[in-house]
Length: 260
Image (tube, rainbow, N blue to C red; front, side, top):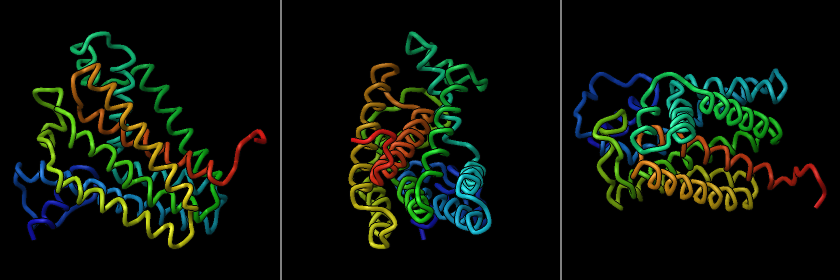
């Protein structure tokens, strides 16, 4: 029952989805709930994948991808996209750690954030629309929990960079056993997708490797620039690694513009 409460706490923190009233609330649960961040990703992926499948029954794939992405963003309240935009603004416009944190805290979006968000969403939409329908659904089911696992790795390994902030309740480092729970949660849907043959094994292997490299690179940049991570950094890692997986999935189908 306690683990169920932790999952619902994570669901409430990371999405707009309602939770039962009997769950209650305890501030201490928020830190423990980070182990279920990838499981929240599984649920978001199921919702986005169902929206894609339903739309694709009546509409072309590019339209289905836009609808699916919009449904996913609505489900999460653009929580991660907002973090990505803030990190683009902060890291693009700030020269000192203090200035970077100050810009990231500003609710207004600047040129770096707007351009970064447009490029990121455009890349996501185009990549998914070029995948075969079942492969697109499979990519959603793998990328959402995997990208949240990559974001969770920052909580596991890095220090929180602010004295306070929207991710402060999650800021205490995870134990290895908690991260293992998160990793298993991300692995299960990947194995299911491979078993169903919706994606080739090469897509999974390359996607995990490239996503891990991207998360490592962003984590190093966070440490160098602000001495740790913030909630915006978690959102940025989630968005970047999600797109990286889609790119690897598309590349596994040999969609290169030029012959190799």
